[in-house]
Length: 129
Ligand code: 5GP
Image (cartoon, rainbow, N blue to C red; front, top):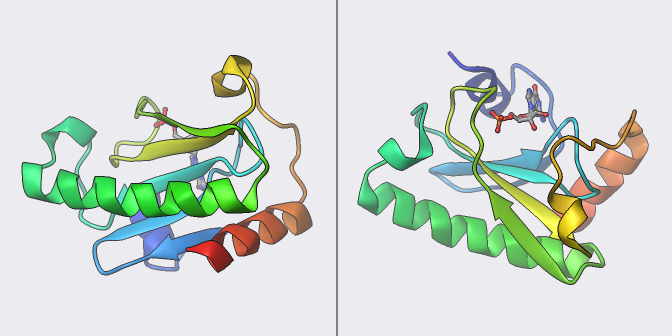
C-alpha cells in the first residue's frame, strides 16, 4: 500500500481538498506555493502515463475541477500543472497556483507551513469544488 493509498483510506491524515469515487485531492505536505495540491487516482499505479486512456481522461476532468476551485480560492494568475513522481510511486498530478514562473520551482519549498494555514487553505479550496 502506498503512502497516498493510506491517505485516501484515512490511515494517514491530510488536508483534503476534494474527492469522488475514483480520485482524491489533498494539499502537498511540503508546498512549493500556498495551495499546492496533489491529485491522485484511488487505484494504485506508479507512473501516471501507464494509466489507461479512459481513467486518465476522467482524472484530467477531475483535475480541471480542482484547478478551477484553486483558482477561485487562491489569488493567482493561473494554476500550473506538473508531473514528477520521483518520490512517491503512486501516480499524481501537482497543481500549483502561479504568479510567475518561479512559483513552479520544486527546489523551493515553503518552510514549516502551519497546520492552521494549511487547514484554512484546504477548506477554502474545498468550498469551491
Ligand atoms: P514526487 O513523487 O512528485 O516527486 O513528489 C511527491 C510529492 O508528495 C512531494 O511534493 C511531497 O511533498 C509530497 N508528499 C510526500 N509524502 C506526503 C504525505 O505523506 N502527505 C502529503 N500531503 N504529501 C506528501
